[in-house]
Amino acid sequence: MLIQENKSTLEVQPRNEEKVKKIWKTAGILLAITVVEFIMAFTMDRGFILYFLFIALTIWKAKYIMMEFMHLGEEAKPLFFSIIVPLIFLVWLVIALMKEGSEIFLMRW
Amino acid sequence: MSAHSTAIGVSSKRGTWGGGNEPFKASYGKIMMWFFLLSDIFTFAAFLITYLSIRVSYPTYAGPAGEFLGSNEYWPVPELVFEALPFVHGLHAPLIFVGIMTFVLISSSVTMVLAVEAGHRNDRNDVVKWMLWTLLGGITFLSCQAWEWNHFIHGTEGGTVLTYVNSLNRLVTETVFGANLNVNEYGPPAFAQLFFFITGFHGFHVTIGVFLLFLCFYQAAVGVYDKRGHYEMVEKIGLYWHFVDLVWVFVFTLFYLI
Image (cartoon, rainbow over all chains, first blue to last red; front, top):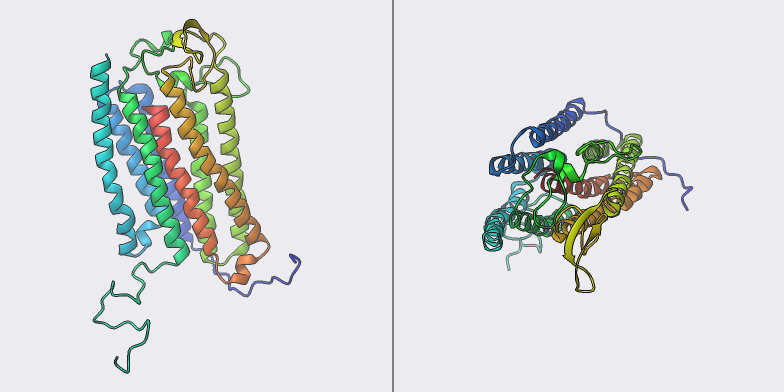
C-alpha cells in the first residue's frame, strides 16, 4: 500500500529566514544560560542565594522553551491563559513543601 | 425560534464564550495536547517539589570537595557524585557528561522546532531531514542516560562504608557499592530513590517521544501528511518533544546543580 502515487499537491513555500534566525538565537540564549549555571555551580558558595538564582534562571529558560519553541505566545489569549494561570498554584506548592522540609530538618537534626 | 437562527450560527449577542465559537482558535488535537501537557507538568512538578522538600530536610555536605565521602547522614554534592565520563577511566570530570546530555536534548529541541517550521511551509524534504536529526538526538540522549544509570548503579571502585538497615531489617555496617532502592554509597536512600524515580519517569517520556518522532518521521517521509493536506502532526509531536526538554531543564537544575 505504501508504493502509491504520493506526489504532493501542497505548495511548498520558501524558507522564512527571519523565523529560522530567531530559532537559532533562542537556542543560543538557552545554551548561554546553561553555561552560566554551570559556572555558578563551581564558583559560588552553596546556599539559599545560589539556589534562588538557579531556580530563577531555570524558569527563565522554561519561558523561552514555552514561548519560542512551543509557540505558546502565538496562540490565542484564552488558550495562553488557560495553560499559564493554573501553573500559579505550583508557587504555593513549592513554598509549602520547602517550609515542610525545613521543619523536618529542624526536628531531625 | 427565529427564522435566522441555526444550530451553530453565532449571534453577536452571545459573545466569545456563548457557544458555537472557537475561542482558542486551535484544532482539537492541539488543544488536547496542550492540556495533556499541563496535566503532565503537574505530575512532574509534584515529583520535583517532593525532591526539593526531602532535599532541604537533610543537611548538605559542607567539607572540602577533595575529601568527599558518601554518607546517609547528609545530602551529597551533585558535582562530586556525577563526575565520570564513558571510555575514560578515573578522570574527575564533574557534571561534564550531564552537560553533554543537556546539550544533546536542547539541540534536538532546536531541530524539532525547525521541523515544525518546515511543516508550516509544507516542505516535505526539510521536515524529513529535521525529524531525522531530532530522532538521532533523542536516541543519543537515551543512550547517555542508560550509561549514566549504569554508572550510578555500579558505583565507584572504593565504595563507602555505611551503617544502615538492610533488606532483612538488620542493622549492618558494610562497604556499599553503587546505588539501589534500599541503600546507596552516595547519600541517604531517598537520594537514589528520587534519582531513579524522577529521571526514570523522564526517560520513559523520552522513550515514548522517540517512538512518536519515528512515527512522524516515517509518515512524513512516505507522504501521509501531504495527502492529508497539512503537517499539523509535526506540530503536535513537537509540542510533546519540547515538553520533554522543558522537564529536563528542571531535572538538570534540581539534581545536578542544587
